[in-house]
Length: 427
Image (cartoon, rainbow, N blue to C red; front, side, top):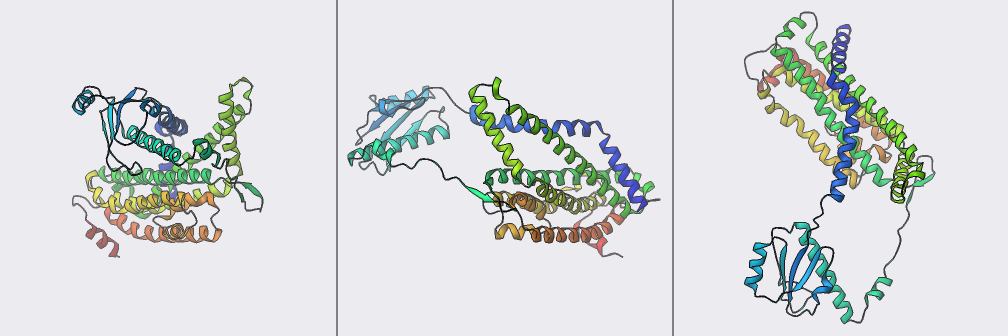
């Protein structure tokens, strides 16, 4: 145990004193926030094409005034030229299109054609398609004596306000959307952390083996103790970084919340957005944050320990970076599959049968259980899943330890799966 502690301490102190670790610990929350803010901003405001789109319109049986079809930056014109002339214009001007509707029964657009220039995107085509169908719908309503005003008067206004009961039996606002977002973020963090810190363990074993340092180390430390020290040391590094991120993020949210509560110097639009942000912060406050973080930490540690023991065995077995690929793909596939399942679970049925099954499979449970954490998972499922994960980790440590013990001192030969199974069987 003393030797494990020595290796753990060395791995932990070496990594947290690294300048890159310190810088990224403080910058990562800011960079992530800026990344998502920028992505949302450009998705909302940066994808618009303000260039005018001229559409030459021709319909055989639908009497429509082209000027009544205009919308946004799309301008419709009556097609008076021959088809060849219009197509020539389209070839010369990417923002010109030709819409030709031949259908006698305009309820079924089987013979409608739209020829566009290169300036029209898939979004533009979809907008034109939806707009024309709406206009045809209005025409059909008028033919049947139903005015647009009458139709609008039958539309139901408002939304149903939803609530839910919390663990204490109190009625609170429904935060299903917020829970889904938080669950997805937690699953993504576990998914990335397992790969990042598990790879650290693997690279550390590879470097010591390649540099022949391990031959000196194992003269005083048993291979199993060396492996466990590396795994636990890097686990503490990851946990320390996560705690720092939680504290920094909490501080940022607190400061932002206080600023948004003082709208006297803000314009009306900013105040409105500030109120929406305050509602989100209130929704976060209403969630069982302690329970969510507990589940996250337990399954982060369990998932990391399970996969890092596998990564340590791989790192000890290979002789160079190129040999890693044959082992990494089958090992990483269950984790990737778990993340895919987590994405479907979070939006469909976080407490459904599929979620329960994959929460009990140890290779997928870390990310699946993380995504379910905000949705009041029964304590029996959490405990059962975690116990299975721990038992699997202990079994995998035993298996990986046998591989590590032999592989860390094996040089020259490129290992295969057959070699790994042979090392496991050796006493």
